[in-house]
Length: 527
Picture 1 (tube, helix red, strand yellow):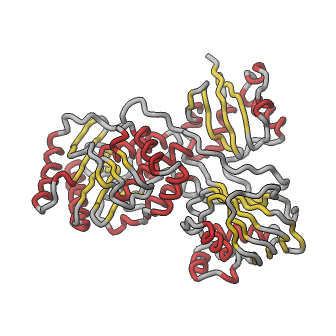
Picture 2: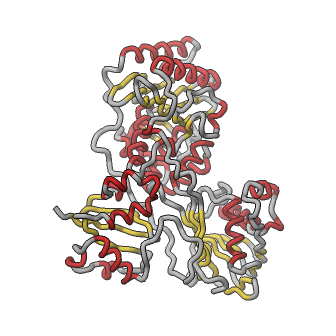
Picture 3: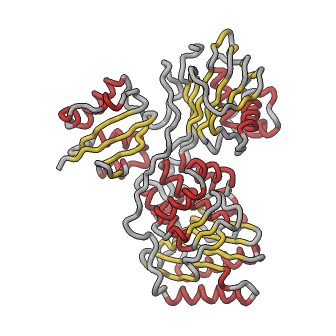
């Protein structure tokens, strides 16, 4: 039976795919050979594979980057039922563009119309069934162990109601102590932020920063303003500024007579204040005024990296909206979202978490999306921010496990695992280095003055992958950590340690090689 699919493309990237009104993942359209090779071929190849291996699948195509209006996309039905590869080719010829690889190119020879990224698109449907297991009949041996663990804490003066635990493996509940009661989650809140960001943007989403001008280049001088249109990139740091300065030098710009103008949400070095971010960027573009931090980060770059010299004579100016009639110069792409989340979670970066939560729509939206995606009642996730700062961020242990499982399910279609998003003990550097935790476990921790929480995946021989969340509240941070570590080691000794990561936790080796990048949007000296 033939079906027609509606694909939406933005900035040469597939953003949504619909069968009628129902959204589907693009990967569900792939033949088995492309699904199998998705990790090595990359999403761009996979997307093109949909068209090359369309078989009975037919596609209606609409694209923003090719400047087609909705009316021009309403091609006759006969056209839409042509072979998919032919449809794509003809549409590309009409629009004057061609299929592109997923990675942005370093240069573009001709000016092009540039639009900033649109509002987030919902990608993850509500689960058909809960991802966690039923509450009743936990496995007796493990349940007894957890009760002894809780009793031990109570004997030291820490009330039982201040602790929560949920452990499950496959479709079996192994242990439950107040598993459905929301408790202060600390940085386990970042699990919710990760899930909400993935379900909103997609694992390969890149945040775009657009650099433009209202002037012209003459003899190495940009006569006018340099305008930065922020795109909520949470990891625009010294290295990005240095690369941007070198591209401006490549365009022949060594001096700017006007101001450095900041619009929209531009962050640098994790600063929310656009004025501070703008001043940091002004320093980063000119090696002659680098602070010591920039000098230090420069030393981590390849030894042949040039030192940029873009002198901005004017001030840093923040505008509430982007001026019109601008000439785009450079488009900068952030790291893919999945890599941003890995960086955030490894070091539990609070500011990155807040930036991503704001990009999703705020703490309440993060909580709502996380509850829907994990299939738990909304009452089990209550958040005031995306980082976990503050004991008012409360999540039940069951919900934490459900969110990990929802992330696993969501990433699976992109040939990714939770190991691509969270710390793998013994393999990834980060804040867990100081903990005595089982090797090869995939974990996220959370700590406040009175809270210690730990959750994730524990690979075992007998139980397979065990998903757990433990949350402890009280003035005993060090003691809680020691008790958590001892419990996990005890369980692992009982169930057997693995010698290598199981496939469902093994990260995709291609992810870590993806970085931020930029592309020049005009000819050298073409302004």
